[in-house]
Image 1 (cartoon, rainbow, N blue to C red):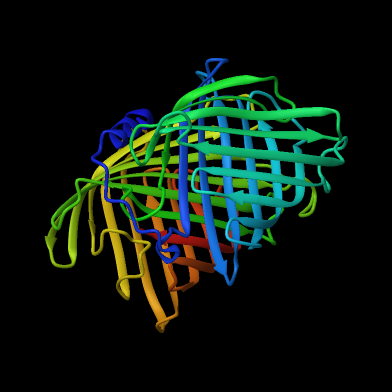
Image 2: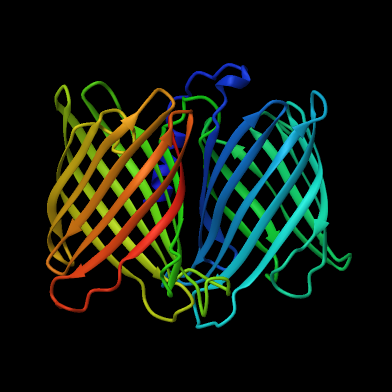
Amino acid sequence: MLPLLLILLALRPLPARAGDDPASRNRATLTVEYGLDSLERRCYRPVFHFEFPFRGGEWFAEMQYISRMNGALQGATDYWVEAGLWKALGEALKLELRLNHFCRHETLRDTDYVWNLNELLAGLALERENVSLALRAGPFIGGSEGYRWLLAAGGEWRGALFPGLSLFAELKLVDLSRLYHEAGFYIALSRSVDLFFKNARHYQFPGMSYIGLRYRSGEGDGAPLDALKLMAGFSPFDDRFKLTVEGEFRLDFFRDDSRRVCVGADFETPILNGDGFFSQFWPARMAYLVSLDYERRIAPRLFAAWVNRYRLALPVDKERPFTASLFTGLALRNQPDFDVLEQPLRYELAAGYNFKRGVEFDGKLGLEIWGNPSLSVFTEMKAQVDGRRLSLDLRLLASTRRRVQVRPYIGLKKDFQLNQPGQDPAGRVMFGLGLFRKF
């Protein structure tokens, strides 16, 4: 489904280009790559990037993962979490400081060790209209043994040889003895979609090649990206799950005043802790939800939709098959996007059939408690019930009203087994932080 979606994006008419005013730039961007590698595996790589400008510079935060899957949806998954800041030294030169956390998980076999690294880097970056160059250096802190110092250099040449063709490369020299790289090119099929090819040798992997399609939300509001959300919460009272990472993006098509088609992709990763909170921890599974909605306005504040949800759970570090289910049904909602703080009361109700679990009911309810022009405090409740279980997600949140909304929260997640009374798993109390951008 994803490659067909990217092809559809590539065939869309080009939107008008946004102005060059820095105030009009997106402060949240999305990149999604989908393709094949030279080992005939499917590769999926979403990148969630957020920027917070201050005078003369920016803070930034980014989360991405690279999943390489064979026919049984098993394979290695690389996670990157990056954060840092840059400060302008001139019109095109920037001073940068960043921390890159990296970890890898194998989903083909059991493992009692998670391989991970932390790159602490400082350097300079040069940004021109068609050329970007960066040179960084720094130590590894914590993480797997055998890594001390890193020297990294990278660059991109946009419009090389002919418009639409761009070349890129990154080199990493570890302890002056091991060289890793990623280099290739991409060809713009539209303003939002590229055809890419790259050859890479990442940490502890042999060299391999990748080819596929890449979607970029880009700058301005011309891209079909509708909303972007990333949330991370920790559970200090849970001995098994300590963190939960959630991400979501939605794309709109054929939208007008009365209808729209919305495609969404969500992921959720509950993270295990091992023997203690500060011991090594790793994801228990990768859970995906791919959605397709056809929505029509039936009243000024009422929308009806045909909704479809494909849920997929991939095991991590366990040699067992994935599980999946398909739900289709009808929904009523009082605004197109539940996550937008548009009305004091927000709701969405859905009923339909889950082809694995039978009849299913889903619900979302949001209620504003207090608000002013710069801050809002509200509650949210999400529920899903079928013949086997009832899942509840209750949260108390606050949100800024800036372009990228920062949303701290406290919440409780609890499942009830309806077909096995008394076998309910313990609930999880979470304290977390979310980032949300509506385009």
